[in-house]
Image (cartoon, rainbow, N blue to C red; front, side, top):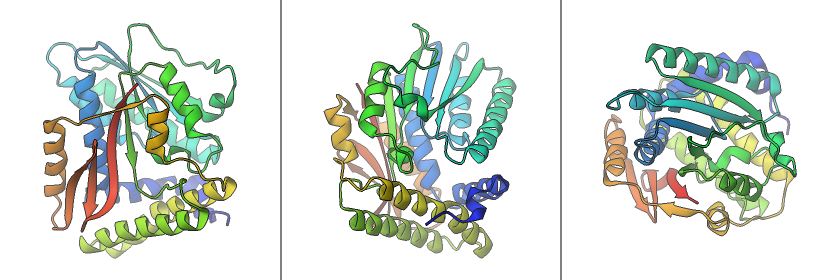
Length: 306
């Protein structure tokens, strides 16, 4: 079940970015995840002059442009910001091209708002080293925060417990995570696939309700949804063994859930209310905030400390 050429070709990058942009504009999905996590980061990192973000799923960097904008609005001088992005070595050319574009965009934006900024790229392969002798430069006076979406390792032979041990050694001030609800490595392979298909079906159902332009919807399906399903199925096919639920792994690795502030909850609800269609709503489940469509979970955000 090899992904089709349009998904693996570097030339598809422009179409993927277009699909991503359309998706962000018509659905509250991405804005809910980004704004909720960013607000939690901003609150915990308040008062620090040097901030270092470790990101395991940077995508096209849109989350960090808005984060930088909020930092620049702080009273006094804006803090310096460094982002270290971990990237999978698979589909190397396309990822390298995408990260180069992300780096250029964020560097340009930082220059516009007069913010001291660094961007570093590391391979996930480096985490497989027993010694973890990484070229990860961390200063003593930096406040470290980690963005660790649950889906980051769906298609990569790297265990979440290993990553969590590495993250814990960094002593971050906060770890933020999002869960699309479709990565269920705690269930057998057939159930995992069915769960993933149902999750994406809920997402597509929510897009249909927004009356999306058919051409835009087709591109979202082709360049975001289909590759997402393939990534989950192929990743699980390579490792059929069941693993504990990701939340169980976080807890057993010494991470404790943080409760989102009332302001963060209000902001998440405002993002959803801006969507010109009813049916989306935010629920609070345990310490997570969950974006739902007709009471079906689309994505959840959580914050952790260790």
